Length: 196
Image 1: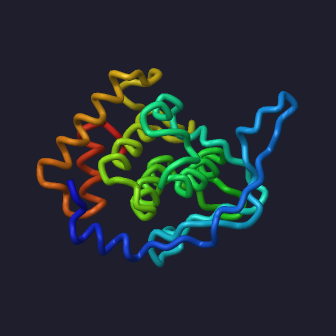
Image 2: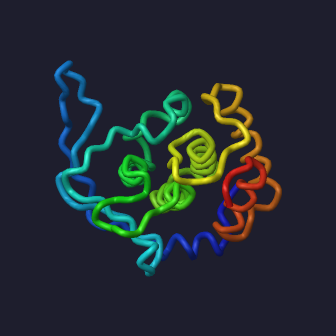
Image 3: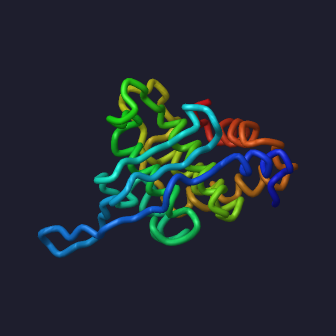
């Protein structure tokens, strides 16, 4: 299951803006699960204003935008090739797509999750692994109340669900990988009843 030439070309247009620099935050119980960004950071999916995803210094992240059940399968949010994608995804999910520095623009949860997939792939996350994480987040991750889309099922994710997701993602990728990322996302959206 390899990416297509078109997908590789799209990934060549992506870039990271600065490195992630953080400081662990320790709460009153001594837990240090959150981190504060010390510098602005971002991801550029393409050269358009909509393709630039910035997070400002001072924002706190904890990886909670990735459903915790995934952590047992793929690892915790700040480990692996998807950590930078997780930071941006967390901030946009925390603000429900309306980060103060981009007002009045609001990003939909669909667009935030879509950016997560592209950013993971730009950071060399395994193709199938990134697709599974994208589908799990799109199905069971944050969605803003203002959006009209209601998934077919809105219940907590279980291990069976994750195995089903992996199976269907592998089917989609094995059946002649969609040629570009838009086609891939459309196919996954159709298979999982995601917003399109």
